Length: 173
Image (cartoon, rainbow, N blue to C red):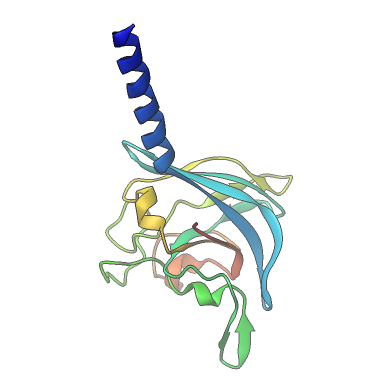
């Protein structure tokens, strides 16, 4: 009986620590007046290979969409060139080393560069992506951003991978 209780207590510790390595982020469309309609969630889980981001989103156009961790926990609009820009308060891509380079999830640039999200013909996304250089703990005080259009993980010919406007945002709890 004593061995069973010790084993049972050990399983509870394992379960508790697994919960600390996961976070779910509520996602909203980004508008020029602030967060808009709720569009789903993205769950992030630590693995031995990095953080896995599992989307459960609906409401996008089909294709690849740029996906990043942004530096601020703020999904509001911000003024740029006299115009309110959706999601601009989230700041730039998370880049704690100050690399100033956009090289994708496997490069040595922004730590917030994530693989693009695939949106299916129904406007949904459920395929997980791996960020090998991130852990859930890195996301605290940040936001997740989905952009219109893809991402070529380069600053050429367009800066920041050529992705389009900020379409959806969620603050990491």
